[in-house]
Image (cartoon, rainbow over all chains, first blue to last red; front, side, top):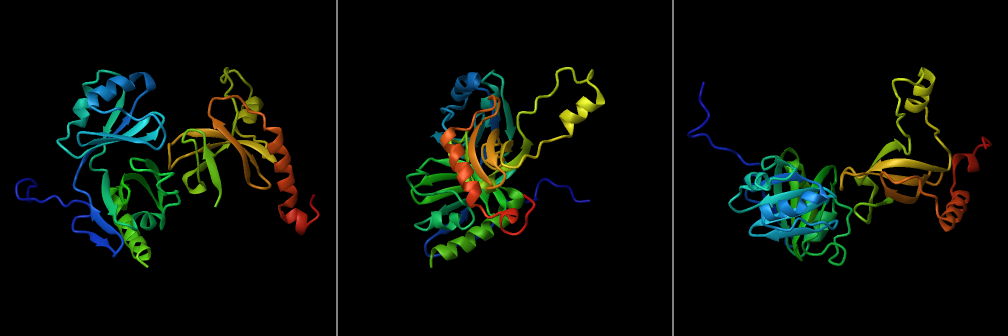
Length: 185
Length: 118
């Protein structure tokens, strides 16, 4: 039996996917490190310091610093994404305070949706108000996209990051591609 | 689409993000091993299933993931208010109650339009 290892190639979820329309660009985000972080209010300061960013406390907000982004998911729950060197688990462990950090780097895949029709493409399957007033740049939320759960982050006025579980990423991408076509009409 | 106000997200969100979680304010007996079978059945199985204003637990499962309490009218399906889990049963604000009753009258239920079960 062939050994896995040297010579074997890891296929990323959404590898080779591309899509969009004249108004929306859809692309798979490069691999990133992610942790699902849970901690009480009293341990937040130490964790913020260890991670190098201020964990957001307000609903629907995120904080970013040095390639890391912390997304508020619940009153004691964050999704921290590192697109740089990584080391999130070690950083969280070095805080020395009570918390739960689970490495979910390979659980999620991310789809980058950008272009003037980006919010309309997402609204094809997501019922949240994505106007800039209600969902400004940096806003994030766990929500639903048609039949799957996503974490949505607005990275710019016309750009979003859609975090989705990898086995649902095919479905989410297909749905966003349909939405992108509709947004261009 | 029904909009439900999540007290943790401090925002009204689509009903798609929520899941019903049964009647609210059911306290677990402290001496659960000592109570009789009837008392246990009362606590564990029996629910009021009220018609009209009812207090329920809901969970913002596809949002912040939190359980919270909601006062809902089961006839009109209208959420009168929501509040955080752990708080005691909140009284319904009088103005809300009035409009909830008014709305109940205008809602076309099967009993009101077809049957005489009432």
